[in-house]
Image 1 (cartoon, rainbow, N blue to C red):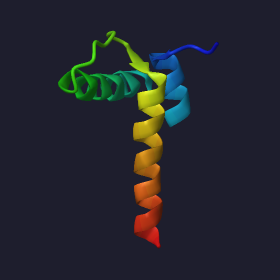
Image 2 (cartoon, rainbow, N blue to C red):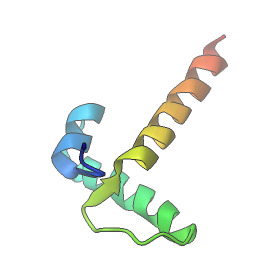
Image 3 (cartoon, helix red, strand yellow):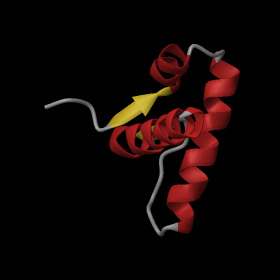
Image 4 (cartoon, rainbow, N blue to C red):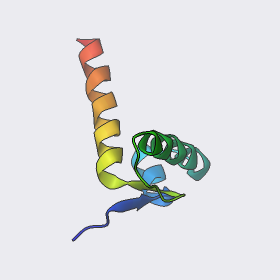
Length: 66
């Protein structure tokens, strides 16, 4: 079974950004989850939610180019 949460190093690597920027992304995603009523862990983000938000944004950008 894979890890349910991603750490900052993994987020930074996937997004090809610095760890400080990856922390910012994690904070923003965790704030969204908190507003939806979920419990979050500081410095980690739910893998499923990260992928949902990341690839949803990529799809929207791709469709805008068409």
